[in-house]
Each structure stands twice: as C-alpha cells, then as structure tokens.
Length: 96
Figure 1 (tube, helix red, strand yellow):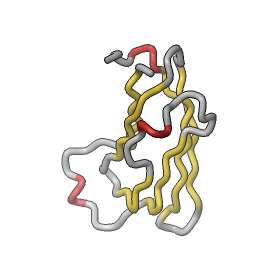
Figure 2 (spheres, one colour):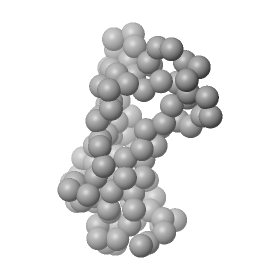
Figure 3 (cartoon, one colour):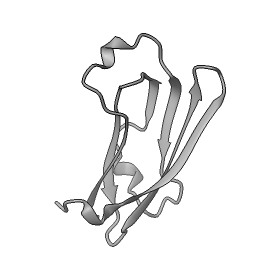
Figure 4 (cartoon, helix red, strand yellow):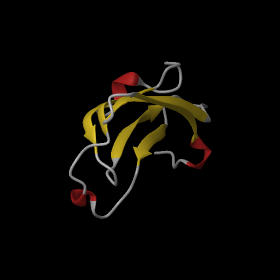
C-alpha cells in the first residue's frame, strides 16, 4: 500500500454563514474494493453537508493503482436522492 487518497466536496472560508444543510446522510464509498484499503479509511459517513463546507475522506490506495473510483450518495434537502460517481487519478499523489 502506498498512495494517500483524498476525496473532498466543496471548499470555503466562511461555512458558518449557511444555516440549513443541502445534503444529509452523506456516504462515500469505493465500489470496486480493489483500489483502496477499507481498513485504512477515515470516516466515510457524514450527517450533514452545508453549502461551502468540506468533507474529507483519506486512506491508502493499493500499490500500482493509478485510478481510484468513488461514489457519493446522500439525501438532498428537498428529499430527493443525490448520487455522484467519479474517478480520481492518483498519479499526482505524493507517496509516503
């Protein structure tokens, strides 16, 4: 295992200005199970996400994995489901 994997949502200097969450029950996952060591992950579940806030999940990618696939699912404030999938290129990640 070698790479440090980081997935983030949003970024702001003033997240306290927003009073109601835009997402609830946010869950990050790495569906293939072959790219990231599940035991190395920090928390992958978050109660709420506010506009301008940030969520970070960190962990170790298995050696020689240049791409890490992820999925984020949540509930929107309107009650509708939210889902996004993507891939993170680890070739620019510093190896420790």
